[in-house]
Image 1 (tube, rainbow, N blue to C red):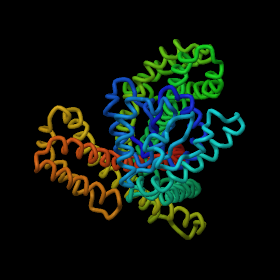
Image 2: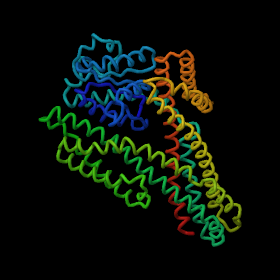
Image 3: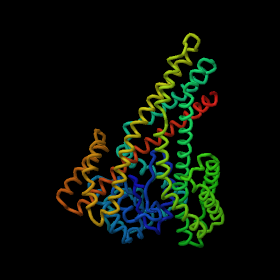
Image 4: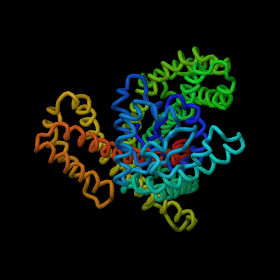
Length: 492
C-alpha cells in the first residue's frame, strides 16, 4: 500500500518510530491516511520495488534523524537522494525530527527546518519534556500533511461523502415510513407484489455487511496490531534485558481479544460457509495463539504466529474487495426503487398521514440517487480495476524489458484518456504522466520508460484507490438501510 507520507528511519531507531506513531495517529486519524514505512512490506513482496514505489508517490517525508540514520548506506544511497531531489523541486515536504545527536550539519538535511530542536534531540529530554515535544512536533507534521491530503486525495467526483450519508439517512427514514404505511392491509398487499425484490435487496445488503465487516477486521489487525507486534519482536531481540520493550503491549492484547470475538461472531453467519472465507477458523486459532504469546512476552512465539497472519493479510483484503464489488453489482437497487415508486403511485392519499407520505416520497428519491451513484461507481471501478490489473502485470516484467508495456500501451492509453475527462487535479496530473510515458516510448529510451511507467502506475493506483474507497463508503451507507428493509421483509 502506498501513502502520501513516507517515513525514513534507521532500524536501530525503531523505538522512536513506534513512539512517534502513537502521538501522530490521533492527528491523522480523521485524514483517512496511514504514513508508510518499511514494516508494511509483507512476506513475498519485492521490498526494493515497494520502497521505490512508495517514495515516488510521497508528498511528505518524515525523517527520524540520528547518527545511525546518517550512517546507513541504504538510506544515503536509495532513500535520501529521491527525497532531496523531490524536495528541491517543491514536490515533497521534508519533516525531519532529531531523535538522537548526530552530525546533521555536515549533510543537506541542515538546509531544512527541523521539527524539534536539534541541540536537544528527543533522546536527551526527560520523559515529561519528551512527551510535550512530541505533541508539538506531531501538531506541526499534521499541518504539513493536511494540504497534501486535501490536494492529493481528492474526493471521487461521483460521490460526495456528505451527500451520500444524507441520502442514505433519508432513504432509511423513507423505508421506516413505509413500515408505518404497511399497517394498512391494502398497502401491505401492494408491497407484497414486490416480495422477490425486497428479498433480493435484503440478501445482498446482508452480504455487503458481511464482507465489509471482515475487511474492516483485517484492516484493524494489520494497522493496529500486526505492525506494532513485528516491531516488538525486533526490539525484544535487540534489547532482551530491557522491560520497557513490553510497556504498551497490554493495549494490543485487548485489540487481539476484541478481534477474536468479532471474528467468532462473523463465523456464525451463514455466509461464513462460503469457501472464499474458509480461512476464518484458522485465523481465529492463530490469533488465540498469538494472544497467549503476547501475554507471555515471548518474541519467538509471536513471530511464529505472525507468519500465517502475514499470508492472510497479503492476500485476503483484495479478495474481500472483489466480493464486496460483486455484492454491490448484484444489489437490485433500481428494481427496488421502481417497486417503491409503484407503491407510492398506488397509495390512496386521502387516508395517509401527510408527514409519513412525505418521508416515504423523499426516501424513494434519495434511494434513486444512491442507485445512480452506485451504477456510476461500479462502472468506474471496473475500468480502473482493469487498468490496475494490466499495470501490475507489466510491473512484474518491466525491469527485465519493456516489451509488455509497448504491446499494451495503446489499450492502456485509450482507457486512461476516457477516464481522465475531468478538470480535477488527479486527472490533469495523470494525463501529464501519460503524455510523458508516451513520449518516452516513442523515443525508445528504456530507462526513461521504466521510471515514467512507475510514476504513471502510482498515480493510476491512487485514482483506483480513491474510486474503490468511494465505492466502499457507498456500500457502507447502503448497509444502513438494511435493517428497515429487513423489517419490511419480515412483515411480508
